[in-house]
Amino acid sequence: MELFKKLSEIMGEGCTLTINIAKTENGMTVGVLPGNKLVKDAAKSKIVPLNINGTAEELDEGFIEAILQPVAKTNGMFADIKSFEEAQKAAKEASEMEKKTKEEAKKNSTNFSKWMELADQNLKESKFKDAITCAKNALQYADKVAGGKAKADELIKKATEQGAGGLFGDMDDKSDGKNVKIDAKSPEPAKAETQESDDEDNE
Image 1 (tube, rainbow, N blue to C red):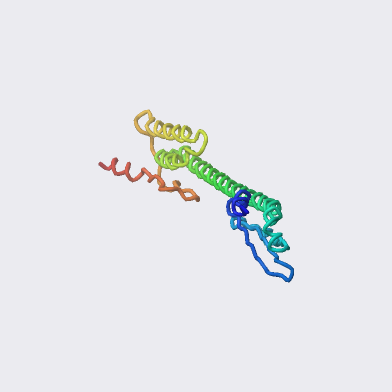
Image 2 (tube, helix red, strand yellow; image 1 turned 90 degrees about the vertical axis):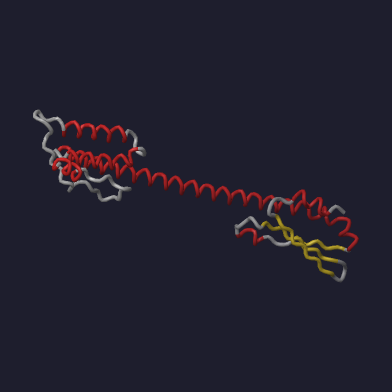
């Protein structure tokens, strides 16, 4: 009869086939219910069994041919649903990843801008060491910002040069360490350089 050989040719991954056999007054009724354990869609619960009636001899002769096409069609539908579910899952994961990437990029850009604004403000107020501290904190986000590293490095260079650019020696550095914090949290902010420099001056 080659029942299982032919069924294996039309059943894909995850496919199941439930067969119920009942004895009737005039012969037998065989119920065949295709399923797929990999499909989560509720539509699969709407599938009703295919019932084949006949005598034992008739079923021996025609059972396979009677169920092959309906089973193959139903299994094809399950395969389409499974592909759709997988595509939905992939799209959702891609969307979440893209959203996370955008949020991270926005956060880096915001933190970089805030640190650079503080650095510029300190530089204008002749707080050279504080300006350098803020620019170094900005460097922690610079790799994620276009041109960020060059901008931060340039400010550090400018603050260093201005701090040492007085006609009669180093210019008066007004750094007080009071303007070296932003609202957003920074990963291990660089320490203000005022204390270290004061210690060196005292020596």
